[in-house]
Amino acid sequence: MNTTLFSRWLPAVEQTSILRKTALGVAGLAFVGGAVAGPAVAAQAAPEHAGSPVSQSVMADKGKADKGKGDKGKPSRDRLVPRGVQGSQSRIDVSGERSDNVKAIVKATKKAGLGERAAVIAVGTSLQESKLENLGHLGDRNDHDSLGLFQQRPSSGWGSPDQITDPEYSTTSFLKGLKQVDGWQEMPLTDAAQKVQVSAFPDAYAQWEDQAADLVANTWNS
Image (cartoon, rainbow, N blue to C red):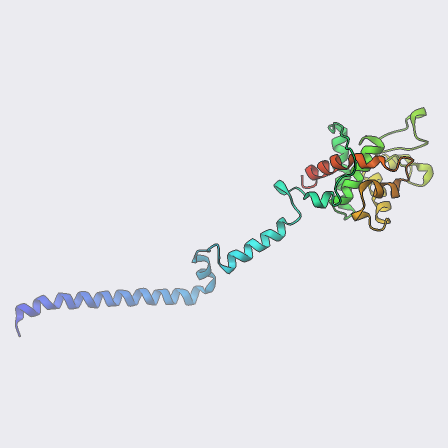
């Protein structure tokens, strides 16, 4: 055998053998790693494509979570005002005590287990009855013995003066009356409010629905 030719051929064989062993070793490691680590690692390592079932599932869940929310996580308009507003609308400045009372009404509504629409009706009613001010006794200007955010009367069984002038108590009392009105969720605000308040001016609540919806939208998730 030609020793010169053999000496040239031997390194090539050794190099091929080394490459084969390396390839088998890598494959073996890959198999062992997959068997030990399980599918969780493989799933984590695999890139998620927009059209994959996992991606579509995540997007579907996100859509469900966002349902009912408008811009920046605010309640959507159709949840706040399902029938739209009626007639010309009025607005007042809502800051300081008034703003605090809006928050108190929204908090009491959530505590009562009711949704955004109930809060809109309560805030709109209070806008008409007291301009969102927690009224004490007004003397000669008082409507009988009406007090608090909703002008509720102790003599009509709404509670004691101290109770009625507590925003949480007065809101909860209003909401208890609202829940007894069949179909209040789909009623125009003025109709739902009138069923509870029995006002001499039953259509007056309608003018506050737009502002009440805005106030609740800005407060509900804050």
